[in-house]
Image (cartoon, rainbow, N blue to C red; front, side):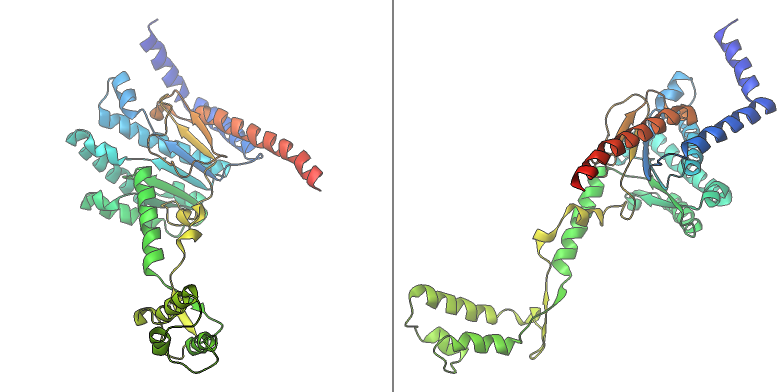
Length: 351
């Protein structure tokens, strides 16, 4: 028998009602057993290999992307059944705009169709309470596609249990650039109220009292040389000048509150986190890329930290299913349990 004939027999058998029932029961049993162990809070998928899958199966490239969206639906159900709270997928890179126009247009229209189906038949997301968030340069999305994106986000906004982050169009460098830019804008344009223990007049009197306990004016401090050394004189003039700072940065006379700007030294990684597209999401636990390519390709560069477990799988994304994700989750759970065992002696010693 030829391989094609055997493949058709296998597909026919697997699609038969008894086989489908048995496979679904096995899937549910495996997912239920996995959910008894530690579950990642945030999983990211770099959905790579749609075009190569299409070429290897001699089908149109757009059809390969269509099968990739079907794989995404399978993966989402697996993740949400297991208890994963946030799933982030790389749907379209900014670099993809450099591809042939017909392919870019096809991807945009495919995204439009799938999002419209999501709006009309959103049982999967509603069943698990998942809301859709689209992360990236929305200003580069065609208007007709953007309208559907906004409707999909609005249609799932009532769901608060889980999140589906769709990066479209996106690169991690652009995300970090935007986060840094908004942080700089916040720190340079948003003054924060600060209460001083003394009024401006009290500070002035305190400085004047050091000049001989006589009520001199600020002008006399600048015009009359001091008998102290040159260093003290410079300090007095500097202080007087400081007190005459730009009135636009001060409140009205007699006010105890002075508006000051945040110190740039207080910017921390957590500050940048708050301005990322993924702000509010739990730390990234698992990063999965399919197609055998072993690089991040400008996806989730900031979010990948010392506790993120990265898996590079050889299957193409349209082939990805529970049988590919199962080893990933089992390996992650094993590492988490090993980490807990390693940390237990440390806590005992500290106690």
